[in-house]
Length: 220
Ligand code: ADP
Ligand code: MG
Image 1 (cartoon, rainbow, N blue to C red):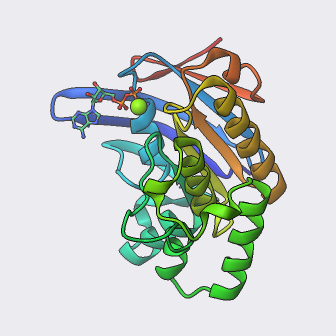
Image 2 (image 1 turned 90 degrees about the vertical axis):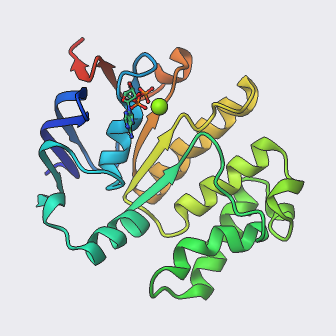
């Protein structure tokens, strides 16, 4: 059974049709890369997958359950726990240190803070940013901030890790490192990775490539 199944998913903003009928199955424990020109609908698709927006028509099923049937609380839990999101630009709160930033998702539910903290410390050690946890985000380099972002996205062991051009603000060496880590961590934690990138070289290393053109998946 697919982890996520999209059938006939369309999305328009007013008169602008952005997604024109997407059919897509995402399997458990796999890595997917989404490629397409700027404005082709990649981010829109990611937001729909993450429950941050709703399709204009069509169905999104998560573990065979229709996302449209989720009640508010269930949807909030889905976004916060089932999904991990890494955006191009970091969304770390400058008033909190990095540890507290990474702990934020766990504050939104009934989680055992001790074990989440342990997990964050392990991830930080693994990613080489343990020395950053007590610092504020603005004291960190772009690459370090992105690693804290990744730790936050993985803190609750999401089944679906959505990354929207996560290396857009990094140089090529750090980009490769970050992508390598995202792949490694999602394999290790059994998450399905869906990553948008413009970088063809990075894309070619993925198990599956999804090409979007004018809001439709282009068959190869
Ligand atoms: P990509 O990520 O592939 O660059 P997007 O999914 O961000 O593309 O956007 C696809 C199209 O949808 C663009 O033309 C964009 O202007 C439009 N769009 C995206 N979000 C909105 C919105 N909230 N309101 C109106 N138009 C939007
Ligand atoms: Mg985009």
